[in-house]
Length: 543
Ligand code: NAD
Image (tube, rainbow, N blue to C red; front, top):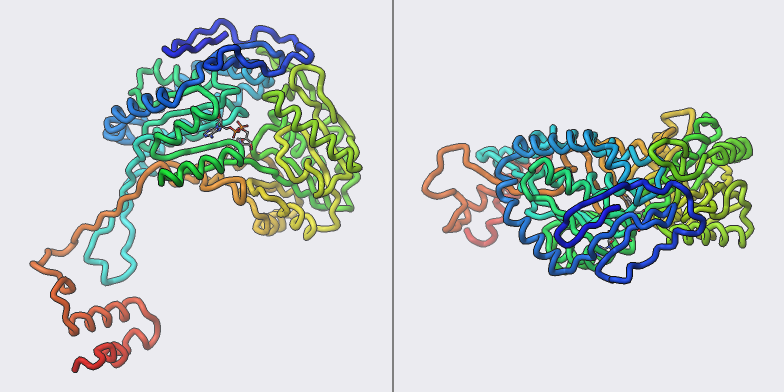
């Protein structure tokens, strides 16, 4: 068990102690001390650690301390930072088993899922460590006009001193790493506020940073919403991942302080299955896309639209794939495909979406109820659903796949776009050109053709939501690290300079006419470029 006190000493005995499901034991009890947060395994209900609910003053003090060390971190440059990030990568590899244990203890994920967070973290850390120098190098863009060629233009990328990263509970290690690493690589100091539901993995990351002896430019604060709000109140850039409701509050707070922010929020991702698709691949892919991590992925498949000619066959295949999933609690062995939900609140949302759909005439083909241990909910396929039901309009963030029959591609696109969210989507078709054409009609930040989640492992692409799914993007090659930088424009003379530039004071009409004529010659089109009379007309009455 892990107990983190105000002095942030970390001791843990065993993270995955009780693998026996405790029916109904997962209600998230509050600690009797409001300043202490109890972390529970949602599958067993067992308390696996405690962390402090840190005050706004404590958060502010940590940010002040980070500010002291950030200039040196910036000064060692991307090559200096690369060494530290690659040491952290080594640490992540060497500690993978322990990291997976801790992560499993606070999420009750299957072992295979728990191992994904460290693997992803290793991959992403290497990507930014090795490319930061290239991505942060000065740019020298070409001047827009021949007249400006007398200057050398330079864009410089300088980090926001302290970046605040606030994360949810669905990937307790990967969600922090996803944004902490590019911000550190940019030269910023980072304060991380992980979810109060799963803070232990984030504290492991801080332990790793300390154990490799890295400069103290990365700190974790634990706590509930007010601790997150205190982060927003003190940093120079906010990177938030979480619900749309919290994201909106953060946007308002950032606007008050005039600090930039980036929001990765909720989703309701559609999958479109066309009649020419490989139905076996589509069924297995969508079962994975909807059920991975019990559906608690921002880009989970949450709605499925199937062309009428293949609807029955697809639904039969999907239901079989979902029914075959093994649900339970793993120890270090990997015996299950899905586990429990993160907390009781999630389980109740899923149950409500299913119940409301059934009350309006939907049918449950498999699942539809609690799985009998902790917060777990059975993998569920729903049919006869429509756009009046909460299971289609609200983010579920659970193991449900509601399926809708559509007449054709046009109806599929129309219904897929009928959402307040716009995170990502998938299109399943035997014709890649058709898939690409449909992708361009979907109002979402990412589309996978004949696959799911691939955009989440493609750091060279931007990842971000449209509509209420977010503001800004993460990744996208250089953009993923430059977002944590202020951009500075520097102009330097190329030619020897004179005592005075032609256009400096004092003004005179001939100088003005010369300037206007030159700008038109350089930038206008056709005869207007050389229309001297039109320029001279500007003289007006001053003959
Ligand atoms: P949440 O919004 O409840 O909490 C997220 C974080 O914000 C937590 O650390 C929480 O303590 C903190 N917080 C709460 N109130 C705050 C405030 N006023 N100011 C600052 N911080 C505050 O979200 P959650 O329930 O932890 O996570 C689930 C949500 O996250 C889902 O909607 C899911 O779609 C979304 N999500 C999005 C992505 C993405 O990349 N788009 C990825 C994962 C999860």
